[in-house]
Image (cartoon, rainbow, N blue to C red; front, side):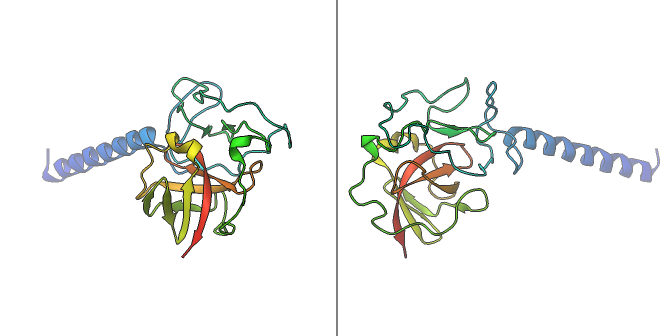
Amino acid sequence: MSKYQTSFMKIFALASLAMATASFTLAQHGDEHGGGGQHGGGGGKVGGGFVPAHGPAPHPSGGHQAPAPQDHHADQQGHPEAPHVHNNGQWVGHDQGRGAANFHLDHPFEHGRFTGGFGRGHVWHLGGGGPSRFWFNGFYFSVADFDLGYVNDWLWNGDQISIYADPDHPGYYLAYNVRLGTYVHVLYLGNQ
Protein backbone atom coordinates (compact mmCIF):
# COMPACT_ATOMS: atom_id res chain seq x y z
CA MET A 1 0.00 0.00 0.00
CA SER A 2 1.08 3.50 -0.71
CA LYS A 3 1.57 6.18 1.89
CA TYR A 4 -1.69 7.88 0.73
CA GLN A 5 -3.74 4.66 0.93
CA THR A 6 -2.50 4.04 4.49
CA SER A 7 -3.45 7.60 5.51
CA PHE A 8 -6.87 7.19 3.91
CA MET A 9 -7.45 3.92 5.79
CA LYS A 10 -6.54 5.55 9.10
CA ILE A 11 -8.89 8.48 8.48
CA PHE A 12 -11.68 6.11 7.42
CA ALA A 13 -11.19 3.99 10.57
CA LEU A 14 -11.26 7.08 12.84
CA ALA A 15 -14.40 8.42 11.13
CA SER A 16 -16.12 5.04 11.52
CA LEU A 17 -15.19 4.91 15.20
CA ALA A 18 -16.52 8.45 15.74
CA MET A 19 -19.84 7.61 14.07
CA ALA A 20 -20.23 4.42 16.10
CA THR A 21 -19.50 6.30 19.33
CA ALA A 22 -22.04 9.02 18.48
CA SER A 23 -24.71 6.43 17.67
CA PHE A 24 -24.07 4.60 20.95
CA THR A 25 -24.23 7.85 22.93
CA LEU A 26 -27.55 8.87 21.38
CA ALA A 27 -29.00 5.45 22.04
CA GLN A 28 -27.94 5.61 25.69
CA HIS A 29 -28.80 9.22 26.50
CA GLY A 30 -31.37 10.27 23.92
CA ASP A 31 -31.52 13.36 21.82
CA GLU A 32 -33.04 16.70 22.73
CA HIS A 33 -36.46 15.61 21.51
CA GLY A 34 -37.02 12.94 24.13
CA GLY A 35 -35.05 9.90 23.05
CA GLY A 36 -33.33 7.69 25.57
CA GLY A 37 -34.60 7.43 29.09
CA GLN A 38 -36.26 4.41 30.61
CA HIS A 39 -38.51 2.16 28.60
CA GLY A 40 -41.79 0.59 29.53
CA GLY A 41 -44.74 -0.87 27.71
CA GLY A 42 -47.52 1.21 26.14
CA GLY A 43 -46.82 4.53 27.88
CA GLY A 44 -43.39 4.87 26.38
CA LYS A 45 -40.22 6.33 27.75
CA VAL A 46 -39.65 8.52 30.79
CA GLY A 47 -37.07 11.32 31.06
CA GLY A 48 -33.98 11.43 28.90
CA GLY A 49 -34.51 15.02 27.77
CA PHE A 50 -38.24 15.01 26.99
CA VAL A 51 -40.08 18.17 28.07
CA PRO A 52 -43.91 18.05 28.10
CA ALA A 53 -45.66 20.61 25.91
CA HIS A 54 -48.13 21.39 28.71
CA GLY A 55 -48.99 20.45 32.26
CA PRO A 56 -51.59 17.94 33.40
CA ALA A 57 -55.27 18.41 32.68
CA PRO A 58 -57.46 19.36 35.64
CA HIS A 59 -58.57 16.36 37.68
CA PRO A 60 -61.99 15.08 36.55
CA SER A 61 -63.32 15.31 40.13
CA GLY A 62 -63.51 19.09 39.76
CA GLY A 63 -63.88 20.67 43.19
CA HIS A 64 -64.70 17.44 45.01
CA GLN A 65 -62.49 15.47 47.37
CA ALA A 66 -60.34 13.03 45.44
CA PRO A 67 -59.08 9.70 46.70
CA ALA A 68 -55.85 9.46 48.67
CA PRO A 69 -52.67 9.73 46.55
CA GLN A 70 -51.13 6.68 44.98
CA ASP A 71 -48.41 5.02 47.01
CA HIS A 72 -47.07 3.31 43.92
CA HIS A 73 -46.24 5.54 40.94
CA ALA A 74 -44.23 2.99 38.93
CA ASP A 75 -47.08 2.30 36.53
CA GLN A 76 -44.86 0.15 34.31
CA GLN A 77 -41.74 -1.89 34.78
CA GLY A 78 -38.68 0.34 34.63
CA HIS A 79 -40.59 3.54 35.42
CA PRO A 80 -39.73 5.62 38.50
CA GLU A 81 -41.41 5.21 41.90
CA ALA A 82 -42.30 8.90 41.73
CA PRO A 83 -44.81 11.05 39.90
CA HIS A 84 -43.58 11.20 36.31
CA VAL A 85 -44.49 12.06 32.74
CA HIS A 86 -44.39 9.60 29.87
CA ASN A 87 -42.76 10.86 26.69
CA ASN A 88 -46.22 10.83 25.10
CA GLY A 89 -47.27 13.62 27.53
CA GLN A 90 -49.23 11.47 30.02
CA TRP A 91 -48.82 12.78 33.59
CA VAL A 92 -48.72 9.85 36.05
CA GLY A 93 -49.47 10.52 39.72
CA HIS A 94 -51.37 13.81 39.40
CA ASP A 95 -54.41 12.09 40.85
CA GLN A 96 -55.90 14.37 43.52
CA GLY A 97 -58.57 16.95 42.81
CA ARG A 98 -59.02 20.42 44.20
CA GLY A 99 -60.57 19.24 47.46
CA ALA A 100 -57.58 17.15 48.63
CA ALA A 101 -56.81 18.26 52.20
CA ASN A 102 -53.02 17.87 52.01
CA PHE A 103 -52.89 20.61 49.33
CA HIS A 104 -54.71 23.24 51.37
CA LEU A 105 -52.81 26.50 51.80
CA ASP A 106 -54.10 29.28 54.05
CA HIS A 107 -52.37 31.86 51.83
CA PRO A 108 -51.94 30.59 48.24
CA PHE A 109 -49.36 32.57 46.25
CA GLU A 110 -48.15 34.19 49.49
CA HIS A 111 -44.93 35.35 47.79
CA GLY A 112 -46.51 36.30 44.48
CA ARG A 113 -46.83 34.33 41.28
CA PHE A 114 -44.05 32.85 39.19
CA THR A 115 -43.68 34.88 35.98
CA GLY A 116 -40.63 33.27 34.38
CA GLY A 117 -42.54 31.20 31.84
CA PHE A 118 -44.03 27.74 31.75
CA GLY A 119 -43.55 24.51 29.87
CA ARG A 120 -41.41 23.31 27.01
CA GLY A 121 -40.21 26.74 25.91
CA HIS A 122 -38.81 27.53 29.36
CA VAL A 123 -36.21 25.05 30.60
CA TRP A 124 -34.10 26.22 33.52
CA HIS A 125 -30.81 25.00 35.04
CA LEU A 126 -31.00 24.61 38.81
CA GLY A 127 -28.53 26.99 40.39
CA GLY A 128 -28.17 25.47 43.84
CA GLY A 129 -29.81 24.88 47.17
CA GLY A 130 -31.85 21.84 48.06
CA PRO A 131 -35.46 20.78 48.54
CA SER A 132 -36.31 23.44 51.14
CA ARG A 133 -34.98 26.27 48.94
CA PHE A 134 -33.68 26.00 45.39
CA TRP A 135 -33.28 28.55 42.65
CA PHE A 136 -32.66 29.39 39.03
CA ASN A 137 -32.38 32.80 37.32
CA GLY A 138 -33.29 34.64 40.53
CA PHE A 139 -36.50 32.65 41.13
CA TYR A 140 -36.78 30.70 44.41
CA PHE A 141 -38.91 27.64 45.20
CA SER A 142 -39.34 24.94 47.84
CA VAL A 143 -40.54 21.37 47.40
CA ALA A 144 -43.84 20.58 49.12
CA ASP A 145 -43.29 18.52 52.29
CA PHE A 146 -45.42 15.65 50.98
CA ASP A 147 -43.20 15.32 47.86
CA LEU A 148 -39.78 15.44 49.59
CA GLY A 149 -39.23 11.70 49.11
CA TYR A 150 -39.28 12.13 45.33
CA VAL A 151 -36.26 14.47 44.98
CA ASN A 152 -33.44 12.38 46.47
CA ASP A 153 -31.82 11.93 43.04
CA TRP A 154 -32.21 15.53 41.83
CA LEU A 155 -28.96 17.41 41.12
CA TRP A 156 -29.53 20.82 42.67
CA ASN A 157 -26.54 22.41 40.91
CA GLY A 158 -27.37 21.66 37.29
CA ASP A 159 -30.45 19.54 36.56
CA GLN A 160 -32.75 21.11 34.04
CA ILE A 161 -36.33 21.70 35.11
CA SER A 162 -39.45 23.18 33.62
CA ILE A 163 -42.25 24.73 35.69
CA TYR A 164 -45.96 24.12 35.09
CA ALA A 165 -49.04 25.61 36.75
CA ASP A 166 -50.93 23.10 38.88
CA PRO A 167 -54.51 23.19 37.55
CA ASP A 168 -56.03 21.70 40.72
CA HIS A 169 -54.13 23.09 43.70
CA PRO A 170 -54.01 26.91 44.04
CA GLY A 171 -50.62 28.12 45.21
CA TYR A 172 -48.67 25.11 43.93
CA TYR A 173 -46.61 24.66 40.80
CA LEU A 174 -45.16 21.48 39.31
CA ALA A 175 -41.38 21.32 38.85
CA TYR A 176 -40.54 18.75 36.16
CA ASN A 177 -37.00 17.29 36.06
CA VAL A 178 -36.00 16.89 32.40
CA ARG A 179 -33.27 14.33 33.08
CA LEU A 180 -35.39 12.02 35.23
CA GLY A 181 -38.86 12.67 33.82
CA THR A 182 -40.23 13.08 37.37
CA TYR A 183 -42.04 16.03 38.91
CA VAL A 184 -42.93 17.39 42.32
CA HIS A 185 -45.22 20.04 43.76
CA VAL A 186 -43.40 23.25 44.66
CA LEU A 187 -44.18 26.58 46.26
CA TYR A 188 -42.88 29.82 44.80
CA LEU A 189 -40.80 31.80 47.32
CA GLY A 190 -40.29 34.92 45.19
CA ASN A 191 -37.35 36.39 43.33
CA GLN A 192 -34.33 38.54 44.17
